[in-house]
Image (cartoon, rainbow, N blue to C red; front, side):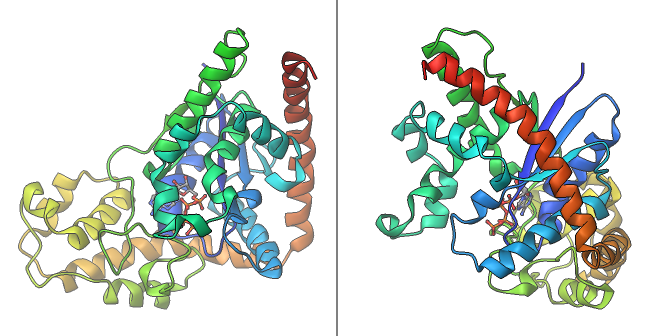
Length: 333
Ligand code: AQP
């Protein structure tokens, strides 16, 4: 079956190893399968749910496009565009916010985490973020959505919204109910400074993440300084489960070598972290360094990056505006 793929990445700063292993690597595999139609969106409307510096936002948009291309997404085959330039996204988000229930949104853990203790001061966009995400996906009749494990709950909400719209207006399959594509195995990469916190662009400490633009020395230094415990590496999965930092580093190693946890544990059981970290550094550098060099090269050519976005916006706009027109007819506008 042909899959219609949609996914987005926020241009909120340095893309990191978590974005790469949780999402972008998967995008590349999907792009390479000739049977798939893929759309990859730079979700700049999502980015402004937290305060952004306009100049930095502009360069983050370019950096996200450059990262897509440097990682192996082919702009001739897949549509790459930025969300704000296709107004159907904002329009559909409003319409779907009149379908989604407050109770559904109140359960979203990402809002709780990002809003922190003072929910009253959080902006409405941060709260309704998953409704915009549903609009992004549903406008393109997407069948599959590759996301990191942290986005699973938002995708379930998207499915609920689509189902409710179809039921309310009695049109079976008007919105396709999309399937999440979450990488099997180790899919949530954690901070290098705290094995219980997700690796994130917005984390203040740069040492908490490996940026896709980091050079060899930066990567080696960050892995060297990554938090660990004092014990040698474990010999059982049960023991690894109790040691979050060791589990995270072992998970990164397993993801990049396509090994199971079992195999990685067997390789390093009883050894000390310094030996393991050296091997891990080599593996990470080997994967990330060619991407980081390509990103730097692409960022020198803003005209090329702008052209990718312009072409992608035209194609995306054509698909999305037709869907919005049909929504208008259904609603009686
Ligand atoms: N740590 C992670 N492990 C695995 N997957 C991850 N993703 C993000 N962090 C990890 C996946 O990357 C894709 C793009 O994410 P995003 O930039 O749109 O938003 P996010 O999930 O909020 O990522 P960040 O890095 O934490 O950004 P900020 O700090 O700006 O909020 C998604 O598919 C996501 O699952």
